[in-house]
Length: 361
Image (cartoon, rainbow, N blue to C red; front, side, top):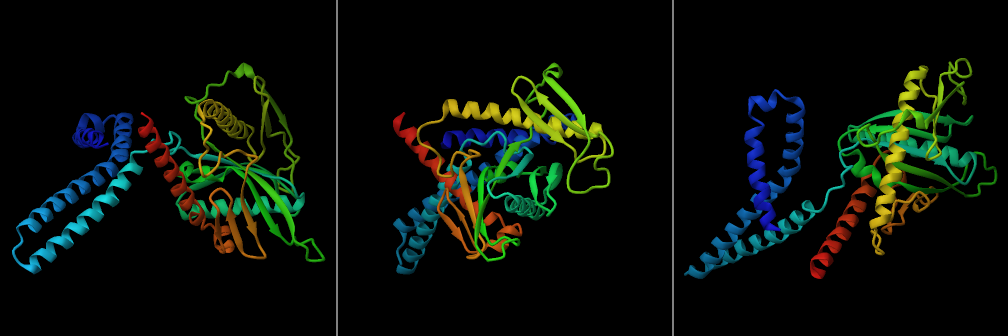
């Protein structure tokens, strides 16, 4: 591990010099690529240098302990040694986490698709609640959101809604949301106060660009139709809505959120590319997946991942057995309270796999 850290530190120092070179700063693409590499190495190098300092403190304390003639000096050296040991242990674990393989999509924007499941209108209303939760979460983290397509119901719910989330770390945190979300509450339309259970399915896709997924125009069937939905000034007036069918895969994507047919087509293609990339990545993951699944689940769309219980103000994430009685806060965007433990669980699982891999090597 520490041989790699020496290499990383050397590369970090090389990048520090290169990023100050006028010929590099003049080349925007090269500068961006080098800065991205620099930013990725920085936390590793900072922790490594802290580790080296802790090692030096440890050695100094041992030497002082051996040579201490007075009781006070001996106690001081023993305390310094204890603190250095603690720092070394902490930094070792943090460095192990920093050296875990990075998800190649972590820096990508995401497309989130929410669809009402079991429960009819109540499921559609719950989809709207989830959409609001993600928008508020995005605002808290400084991300931008943009609706790509929405099929709204008369009561203000969504049969389905897809939207883009743009910002640093969007995929790295929202990727845990894929799966079935279940709600237990008394619907507003329920006269006898009975609790109903409804579901919504969330799909989180990394945004794919044309480099990631190349689509042959010959493989596309593009149809236009009039927008439909619960209201809207231009509904049913112009054929601006777009439906794209990818013939080889059978995937169908619709977009009717914009007045412009061109803009709807562009958004639909962005969603189509991301869905195709998601299919390809799932095939790849299935091909290399081991029998032992991660603690945070497979991310499968059919997997029930979380329950929102209104009468108890409870949120339960079934993948890691996490229960929080902070429903209102979480629905108002405090999603980090769930996401942070999920990230910790995944890292612990990765560390365990890494140690098993070294033991079996």
